[in-house]
Image (cartoon, rainbow, N blue to C red):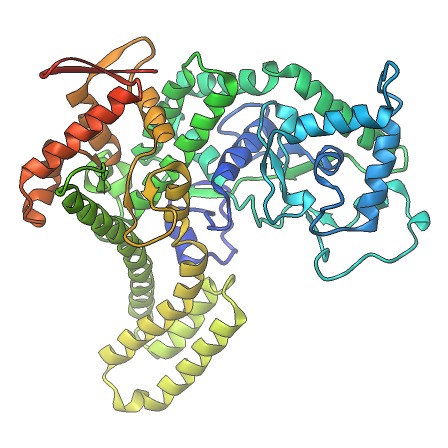
Length: 547
């Protein structure tokens, strides 16, 4: 198995982890892919390809608690109340009030920083986040262990200052579930032979996060450092988190090079820093979806060497038909788009099932003298590390019943049932934690609609359209509309008009007149024109440009 990153040969990995890398998980919000990626990159001092070392990220508990802990806290704790109180007392020594109440000045500072909050809903203070307007705003995931089950009742006067933070963990992986780490590895792998891109991407992010909004960064640093100084004087250890990324399959897959080039092109802009980072967040999530579809493609099941050459870019290209609202034949496009979305989901399910089938068949073939049931029982232990105990118990009960019936069954029937039993046991975890990722991210970035309701299909929101335009069209340049559509299809499998529909066989497969796709293309052209991304000079000439 070819991997890029820190692969633990002794660890138990689920099938979806082995197929897509360690790891993606549905519980991660779309913006947290950006936050985790930036935290890891900053933790490596803006260097790619150094995954064997540990990245170092400040905990920033003082800043986070100052900004987010208040009377409306979801998980109130006397230790946190006392910590906020002592921090504010410390900050009062730094404030020049000029006749105004010091408490009001401190509250205004808090309100200013909190205005950059991006994740608050239904979360405790230690799981909330700020938009990364500066490196000092990057907050690593934290968790106060037992905060939802127990209320702290001990005497606070018996606690030292650093003990107020006791019990807070930083690698629970509830929200920073490694999606950002995976993206860091993708860009690292994609720039192994592209040193110009690697240094350019790193340098641009360093400028965005260190040189921009330095006043806000200084304020955040002063607040957090005040708490660090308080706890250090009381004997607390260093205020940092250390970690290592997981791993990525098939490190030479050319898709990673595509992603690196996209990111390099996007960062070559004159946009406001906040808007630039917003577009980067959309691009990261779009890339993650393309990556999921790419590795779920059925061609992956029949060719283990596919990702070691450029063949995978064509053979594993997704089919993402964008539905542009329009006249009656728009319903035809909508129906096909919804069908293709379901198809991509089925491919993911089939990929996991094929993995189980392949592992079971191979293991039985390697041990011809052993009983298939005994082999699969041992095999299951390799993949059940993160499976709920109820599913393990059900699997063992089913195996016991199969043993009782096995004497009357053909060997092929036993093997088929073993494959089904093992898949059913593993599928629960896969469907609960992985299968919904593409829909969740797609809805968040405007690639899938509606947010709720029937017939979800592929669409393209304004911000995502702007992001892809910035990626495809060079800075200061233009591109013919037809070339833009061609690039969308060749690069990502995005289908708009009849030319792309013909190449994928959609017209014949769904028995649709190509006029429906032509009108879909016309609606897309008008959409780009109204968004300020296209200038039409005549019926035959339209040029796409950056905003």
